[in-house]
Amino acid sequence: MSIIRNAIRSSFSLRTSDPVISRNSLPFLQESRKCLSTVAEQPPSSPSPPPPGSSPVDGVKKPASEGRLYGKFSGFSKHTLRSDVMNILEGCNVTSDDLKFSYMRGGNLNPAGVYVQFPSRSSYDSAMRAIAKKGRLYRLERATQSQWDPIVPYEGKVIALHGLPPNAIIEDIDRFLSGCLFHPGSIQFLTIQGLGSPKRVALVRFTSQTQAMNAYITKNRNFLLNQRITLQVLQ
Image 1 (cartoon, helix red, strand yellow):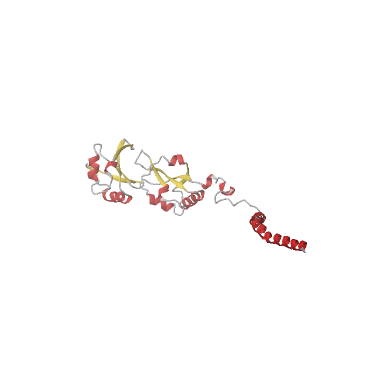
Image 2: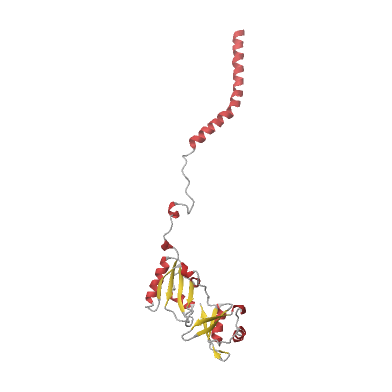
């Protein structure tokens, strides 16, 4: 009996200690199962998609035809305005800021050409088609950025005074333009080669295109020191 009793006690003690062992070891088993399940359940890694703009297609250098192009527009008169050119280039995706007028220093400051900055080749082609519809009065030819960059735009705010007497000074220009809004310090004299002999021209910058046109309307062909003065709005 004592042997049976001892066997029962031994079996009972083992059963009561089993839960302790299992509880102590359970966290490690759970962690082990977590690690195994995590590795097993993760899908195979795949490369993430490239961010916008970094794909090989986007990275290919665009052909030069897709960039800006420059053209030289000719066939205009002395008094051509920016708005006149814009009317011809309507629908060609250019703005007034894309125009620069180049003037000849000889003669009467006639435009040597109007340089146009086109945003794309398609815009340039549209201009060629628009000019073709106007007949052969105008001509557009390719130009370069090196021709475009040095030109100082007058933006329709500068007026040239032609027919100045040789003894005219800045104070005479001030009196002639009395009532007009211009920058007093902007007055400068030029000597250009006329048809017969050199002649003096004064350039004056006004505060806006509107003020320049107002001066042209009110002062053109008025007298300065007994000589008739003609005005030209430079674009």
